[in-house]
Image (tube, rainbow, N blue to C red; front, side):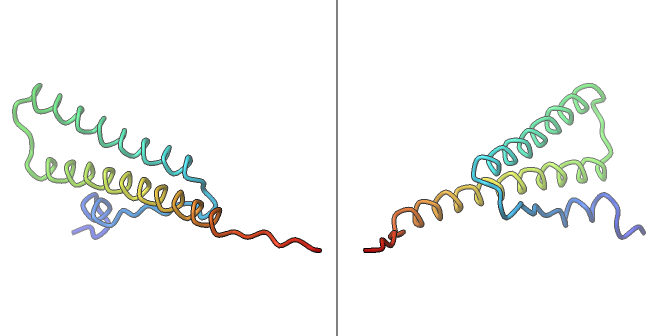
Length: 100
């Protein structure tokens, strides 16, 4: 049994964002991950319609991969939201010091 096979990868996929990324970049990443999930879902639907029969193990792996893409997209969107809120709090509480 291969420990680092497709199933292991899809179950242990994690999104690591650039700490300096702005919310727009994170939202772009989220859109990209969700587009991957969408295209794989379409591909799976075409495969099922065309073949009519699919290997259950491969189907489970494909669905886990789609779930991983969606999870990464949701994580990006969540981080973008948190960074927007953080920037808003910083701008509201920031008090410039003036030298008299």
